[in-house]
Image 1 (cartoon, rainbow, N blue to C red):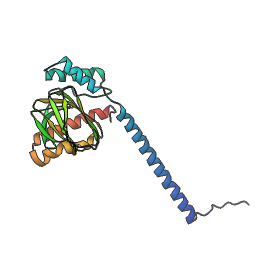
Image 2 (cartoon, helix red, strand yellow; image 1 turned 45 degrees about the vertical axis):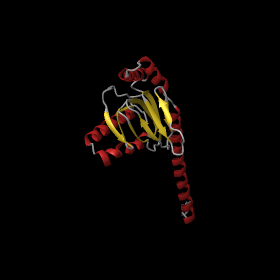
Image 3 (cartoon, one colour; image 1 turned 90 degrees about the vertical axis):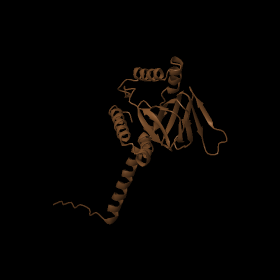
Length: 223
């Protein structure tokens, strides 16, 4: 008669199996993280030609801010299908925005205006591009001996994790485009409303429109 017996599992064997399992879990986690970072880097490298578009809008609609806005929205909706980028078609959905001590008005196409304001840019996890359409923006970084001037047709690039003081002169309009970890910018955008102005209707409207637009873009795979 032939009999077989299963080898007993020793503490050393259990320890080796546990170590191997732990290593595999970490390899899987690091692989997923690496793929995610590579994908984010690839998406981050894709640049929309917004500077050229802003300059074309200015040239086609001199001294006509409304015409510039409509030109930009029309061009973007014709260039990028709704399966690629979801743009809010309502060009009149403006709302107040208080952030970093500055106050202006924004619309979810990343267009903002000001009757004249200044404040802190905030320290963000995204690169921020201010394409000046009308008027002029000034900026100042600690240690700089001269201010930065950005007239209509220029673009003010604020790299992520960089902060400046900025000023938008009376009647300044800009197309703002942020690229990076956008949700982490939201606390800066809401903080002044919660701690200072207490403009709860604007807070609710901003939260609703922002959440709606982010959800619509997530549904088409835009992250």
